Length: 138
Image 1 (spheres, rainbow, N blue to C red):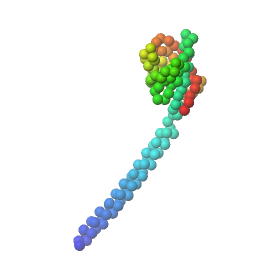
Image 2 (image 1 turned 120 degrees about the vertical axis):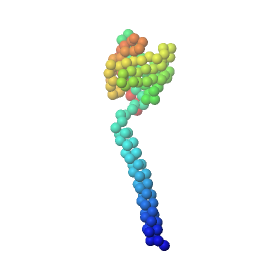
Image 3 (image 1 turned 30 degrees about the vertical axis):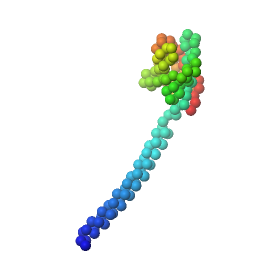
Image 4 (image 1 turned 60 degrees about the vertical axis):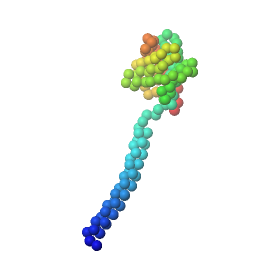
């Protein structure tokens, strides 16, 4: 047998073993990197409330209490559930309100979403008032 052939077989075997170890190490390392990234994201992400209840006290003396879910659904004062969106850049909350269509409220300030926070708002219907966070659940 050619000694170079034996050496070639041995080298190929060793390279195959190293490649298998690298694959195992790579899989293990990738799993650890993904786990570390997920933990980092979870620890650095703000806590999202499952729901936030907001009282909208209009300057005209009317008050409406809405519960905003983290799923894009809002419970209206009459108990109906409607879709809503919130644009952080413009601080605008829009909801599809039965018998009124889309109604939007733009807030003067955006807070942290804690009980007791208030902000002035104006609506697309031309009304204004003060919104107060009255409850938060996680």
